[in-house]
Length: 203
Image (cartoon, rainbow, N blue to C red; front, side, top):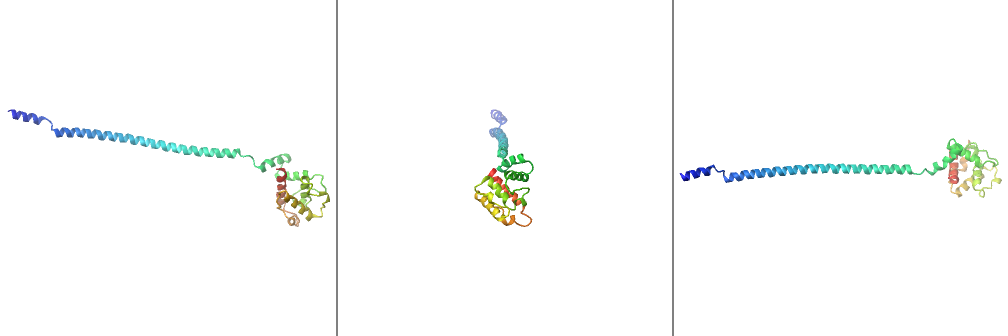
């Protein structure tokens, strides 16, 4: 009877290996779920960090671009007016109208009182060279013996004027030949040369 009852009692006890298996199973399950949860949280954190970095990098790049553009625009607005615009503005305000008419008026005023001078255009009025010589004489009287010049000596007048201009750095963009051609010189080329004279002495 004793051995039998003892056997029955022992048979009712759970097997040691089963207990260990269950404990290990629970432990492994809990550990796996814990690790999975941890990995999930880390993944979420990494993803969030990555997005933050991307956003930060994107906003930084955008900020740098905007800052660069702002500096560039500021530099453009702060640029001083060009010498040409700056110096022609008083002339335009004084005489009104276009640059062509303002330069024509400037020449008329500079040569007022000079003999044999009647500047009404930028073509025939300059053909004999006296208008060039008169303008130069107002700035460089020692270079131009104006009282000895005559309208008939066109080549000499033109050569003297162009050489005088070159001595002070004004390029000779006109030739004696084109100034003496039939029908008169090209008014645009004469205007360009006169403008270079104005720039040299007035700007």
